[in-house]
Amino acid sequence: MSPTPERAGGRQAGVLVLACLILFVDGYDVFAIGTVGPSLMQYRPWGATHDTLGMLGSVTALGMPFGSVLAGWAADRRGRRLPLTVAVVWISASMAAATFVPSLGLFAAARFCTGVGIGALAPLVSAYVTDTAPPRRRTLHLTIALGAMGIGGTASALLGRLLLPGVHFQWLFLFGALPILLVPAILRMVPDGPVEQHGAIGQHGAVEQAGPVGQAGRRRGLDRLAELFTPGGRRATVLFWCASFMSMALVYSTTAWLPAVMMKSGYDLGSSLEFTIAFTIGATAGGLGGSVIADRGHLKTVTFTGFVLAAVALFVLSTPQPHVLLLLVSALAGLGTLGGQNMVIACMTAFYPARSRGTGLGFGLGFGRLGAIAGPSYVAVATDLFTSSKAGFFAFMVPAVLGAAVIAALPRVLGPAPETRAAGQEAAPVVP
Image (cartoon, rainbow, N blue to C red; front, side, top):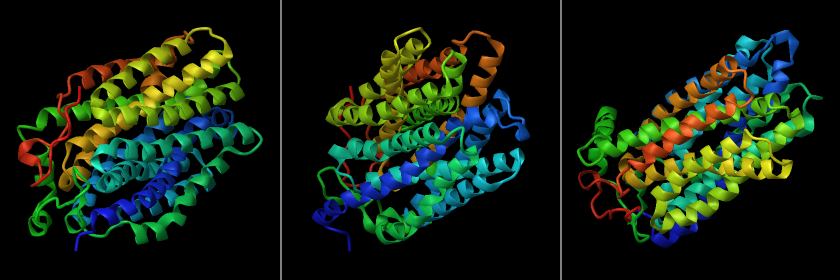
């Protein structure tokens, strides 16, 4: 029996708390390599260089497409519970391994495994939150959950600020093993089986069924992928993949390189980590305000503005400014960078119906992870080729500008295409 709208509404708070806890540590894991970057390069036994830092960022990102695609597909086939449990256990074990491995090669292997888990968690948690959120508040609920990644990044930078260089940098990865403690809550709270068995919250708060259970159970993975490319959806799908690529390239290049780029501009390690903290706080606080505007029918506009804001703020960071102003601009850069990525995810959850939401998010974010792979190495090449201290900032700006152009090309209506929309499911509101 499907849950009543009242019962579904009653569990939304619990869903958000669980989602925030999972993505908090996920964000910590994402930012950890950037936080320890300067200390890692000073650790003589491993002989790390700027190229090593770029390699580790790309190796971490290399595992993400596998996690995103497999988790998104499994979420639509098997439900949210089992893939989410496996992903949380996997990422906890990987971060524990990164704490204790004795060599750079094994550390890189642990970061690859961590990347698989990071890639899996975003589509799984996003689909789970969207299933239970009322449509007129979906962007807000999703932003609250995804905003925990920025808070996790802040925690990573704060720990680095407090402990480095006095503590060996590997110990900062041990905190990333804590999600294992959330497994009992996941098993208790996350519905088991395909979304068709428990439904998702519909346009006006009613529980919607995503399609016949038997038919969905027989649908193969390739059929689910083909559904993303129906005549009414293929253009948006391609643009989502491109926007995801640019947003991931922007996020993972800045998270891996921002402290090092700031130090190259003449700031010490403490000041550089202060900018990272401001970056993540801006992403979290500003993202909540943007989500409220997005839920009023301006999702596309908010997403476009985020990319533009990131480009402008990163340019200002490359210029001499008072310290307080630079902290404020760092916060705006975080809003545009991480906030822009969250809005891209919100656009995809608004577009795909419940029965294929996991697949749409998994493949969209999986393609975007290619940008996460390319981003850190791309910045490493740019900073090596150009001696200017501004080279890193200009490298950050390129995906921000291209991302804004892609979002501008999206359809004005971000709702399921008529041929992919479940019975009784209404289109999303027009997005200016």
